[in-house]
Image (cartoon, rainbow, N blue to C red; front, side, top):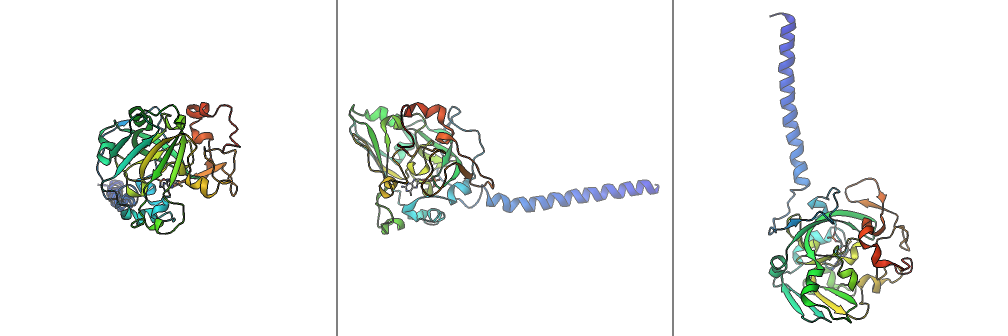
Length: 309
Ligand code: MTE
């Protein structure tokens, strides 16, 4: 064995050792990383059966389950971004009933089991753009609101749809104070409600909704600011007149009835031109109708969107 071989062997041994050490180090680094991203201590929830939608889903990277469940707006559970996660167990979801009534041929009451068994569920990966200039991408699971409309059959004088969240002053910490005029209410024009993008969501990331995201059933309207996507729904009513919407009632000059995502119309206190995707450092441009223009443009033909913001 010459010096050269010895050296070579020495090098090989060192390289193997080095590689092994690297592997061990890497696994030590990735362990806490795994726990801090997708597999963090989120209790497992009921799994859902669903098809994957490709027509309306974005192929952008989804936010992690941790981001989606720890940075929320749900004033019933508190007004801080972490409050809904910290107070999640204060939302009582047992024996949930969703009533669909008003100007319809056949009113309907659905319980939580109906909501996940009566309808063919789909995964829709949607961008959600909050009025506060941040956004997320979420793999929602649900079905089109239109499926409910096909069952209840709205009458011809039904022009709008009114949505109402749970009222439970005894348990919900945010409802012990009048920070908003409870219950939280929202509304859509009937053609917006019937649009295929408008989703009734019962889950995300393959399982039923976590409480902080609006368990057991919520609305998702991806081309409008996030506050239109009302959580923990107890009532959907078909009505003739434009319904009261909580944030519009609270500050009509700041939050319009339509609240379509529109980079050309600033909020009175900040621009809506850019947004920060949760988890990103850099800001990105906000897209008209949150990037859903080709699907929803025609809903607003001949409307002045600066006036009807
Ligand atoms: N629904 C109810 N009932 N109460 C709320 O406070 N906040 C809205 C909307 N739905 C809210 C609500 C706002 S401002 C946003 S941005 C979205 O929920 C946030 O949904 P997420 O927490 O699932 O991301």
